[in-house]
Image (cartoon, rainbow, N blue to C red; front, side):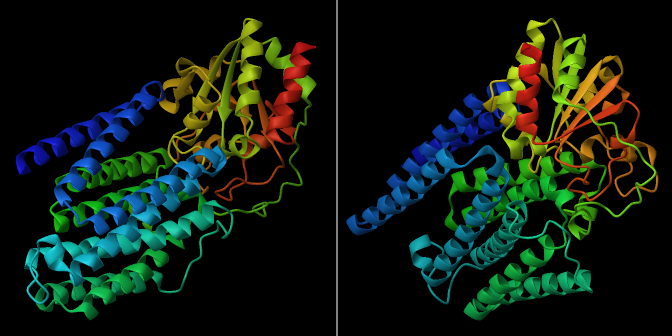
Length: 464
């Protein structure tokens, strides 16, 4: 039986790897999701068969699966795509909490987990449960803070506590101290001290991180949740949990690196926090700057008579739910013989792949969507760049102004198109809190208003 279980867990692991492979591109994402669901189904079924619980235990397991699965299915059906970043953060918090609860159960009933008896838990199991609980607790509170920031229930501005780095270092040192204590003494006090300190550390790590770094935070917490699951997998002796946790942890870490590269920031600088927040305006004196304002009719005329249009979606598109109207506009332009492409910045939106998901929801053809490095050189040949709600990722200050806090961040060179049409509610700064110099360039026309309504008006004007 154990050999069969190991084989089935291996099959699950292979399916999880194929799932990650499939999720790397929108065209294969559905297949990737199918692989992942199949692998998880096999892993759960195998674990249930191995557990051979009593009838009462089986009823509790099925009840738990029904409650959790039902809640997950309902949330997945009703959640709007604009709320996907905070949903992901919320799910990460549940993974962290589950790791803490499993570690606590192993501490109080070790015989049920095959790791010894009370007072004589295997030393390696004590270390594994301590590390799993610590990472899980940190993930729990960190994800809650990320959820609150992303959902607008907490300011996106970095909250900088005095001596925060010294406090975090002291908390980390105490966690290591109590992990060593638990490994030696199996003290319940040490275990709960680890949990309490890790909860505090998770809160203090994420609170000072500003809104501009939120895409990195989401992928980083994803990585933490994976390592928490892997740690508990060792405690439970569950191969599938170890494989899954390691895959999630490593892929989240790699994604965090990609996000940092896309922002030209180091991972350490993100963890140290203090950059980016929601502001109405950054306080700069723009009284001597002029802005060219346009209408939907102006935009329709320019794009209908263009040979090439590049569309740049951002979080403003997500908030306005404008992706369907945008796709309709693109279809109308293509009917007029206009070459239409979409340009995606790696940190556009508030989670990795946010824009790709929204465009896929609107059935935008995958072969029209390009990443920054593949399309940036084409802006110089474009007649129109249509920026819909993207702010920081199009700010020329990141390329031209060495004094700017975002200097060095790769941007989409929309200002190099003949005309840049910029759809935005106001002239306010983006999530990073930095004024966008693109607004005041000669080739830029600002289309102030709701992104969805503005795009729908452009469609009507093109039809007219």
